[in-house]
Amino acid sequence: MCGITGKIKFDNSIVSEEEILRMNEKIKHRGPDDGGVLCDKNIGLGSRRLSILDLSPAGHMPMVSEDGQAVIAYNGEIYDFKKDKEELEKDGFKFKSKSDTEVVLYLYKKFGIDCLSKLNGMFGFVIYDKEKRIIFGTRDRFGEKPLKYYWDGETFIFASELKAILENREVKKEIDKQAVYDYLTYQYVPEPRTGFKNIFKLPPAHYFVLDLSNRTLKIERYWNLDYSAKLYLNESEWGEKIIESAEEAVRARMVSDVPLGAFLSGGVDSSLVVAMMAKNSEKPIKTFSIGFDEAKFDEREYARSVARLFKTDHHEFIVKSDMIADLPGLVESYEEPYGDPSMLPTYYLAKFTKQFVTVALNGDAGDENFAGYGRYKVYQKSLIFNKIPRWLRRFGRAVLKFIKKRVYSNSFIMNVIKFIDSLDADEIEKYIRYIGYFTDKEKREMLEPDFLNNLSNSSLFLKSVSDKAKKYNWLDRILYTDFNSYLPDDLMTKVDIATMKVSLESRAPLLDRNFVELMAKIPPELKLKSGESKYILKKALRGILPDEILYRKKMGFGVPAGEWFRGELKNYYRKTVIEDSSFVSQIIKKEYLEKLFAENIAVGGEGRKLWLLLCLELWYRAYFKS
Image 1 (tube, rainbow, N blue to C red):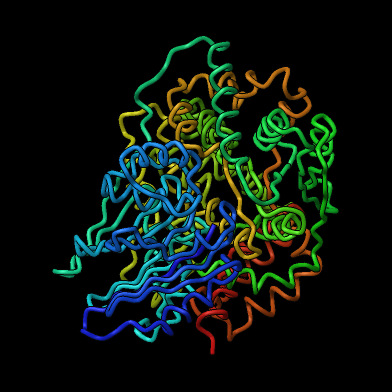
Image 2: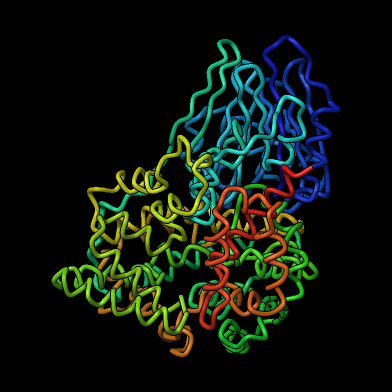
């Protein structure tokens, strides 16, 4: 795993090695083992390397093709590259290393942009093609690895992380208000925005071509997840296919020249991965779990149960509220406005795990593949509740709001109110209310008028994604939407930043291309059946995992934010966010901030909106407050 940088100037000036080295230094954590620079007049490429495969100097980057006509800066892992290498050798290509980087380079030499159809893995890479006079860059299908860029018509800059781009004098730091507005709904910035004007992230499953002759930048999608080709097998047959495909994906990700382990929460997905790893390893698998003193958020007992079952070498770490002191630095590492509370335990889990291994497998994307999130069940229920007369729904809502004022809680009751409100909304508006924080209506009420000028509704982003899946069943449409929004922009961002901050490579077997494409063929009624989420996956795992793991209540991977804001963080939040000099208090009306604070620290308040605003304030201070 690595980090990449690069710069192309069109004003006839030279790109110096010093410019690329400064960018490289900003992402050294992504690749502490090696670094390299290659400059050719107005073009410069850089790389930082975390050695996983072929630890020798032969894997040094940027890597140049044998004929000298192509240069690659590469970040990622291709899991079936040895098969491709054999085919390339038959065609006469000669290799100097055992790395997947060189295989990707020669796949490009042979197939051009069509090489992307050959790749199964996670990646973000850029190739300078001297012969065609183009810069070609791309990102993997699910956004596991990042690729960000700046383009003003005169200068093109790319990097794995924003902080390297911001190192350049051509880049002026300006807030993208639309990105901040969208963040307040989603807790992340939807692609292609980043929070900074003129800096963008390449969407997953896309590539760009920068034509060096005419200064044009073209961006195209090269792959899309297809839910239309269903396989109507019986449940037993599907169970066999799921386990077989999962095992193949796990086995491919166990190839490593450095120590390897797995994150284990004790949930279905991570337990599946550990089960397959144990089956394919002669030695005990190293597993890593994280917990909290607050029992409602602590999953360690489930993780221990799985660890005992598969005889793993198990390790645990406890996250405590005083660790919030690391939050400002962590928010700075995320670079964009990012408010998923699970960033904190994910970072500590990665930091703890790095003490023992360099590569860790995870269970990410099980929910997207098999409809595991609770919101899918809620949406299904809404289809039934829509049949209740509107006057009766409104009466129920009024009663609940009256109760809420008396008990001053905004967790369960507020969720029920949100559910009732959503019944009159269209499909995507309804879904946004399940997953979102502040609705467009709330934001128009709470934000200062000056900030609201020329901003579009945040719902337009998710609508644009969902519209591409109109032909599918309602569940497939939502799964497609999550695969193209929440998964890359929230989950993959969280894992990439948290792990690479400590130079740990994380691999997601359940995002194997072949696995995901096969799971998309499962009829939706086998994923969510009789109110049971992940129905077919759980059935497939009967006999492999115990029922106490398969059918336990889903907990998620959050933090006890409500408890923390009612305790140690209460004064910290008020001082940081509500004070008059804060960025948040400049864009959100003071009375709204006070009301929100009071509601969220009440008994039963979850504090997630407070966390969202706290992270926004810390982001602003990290990047804009002198």
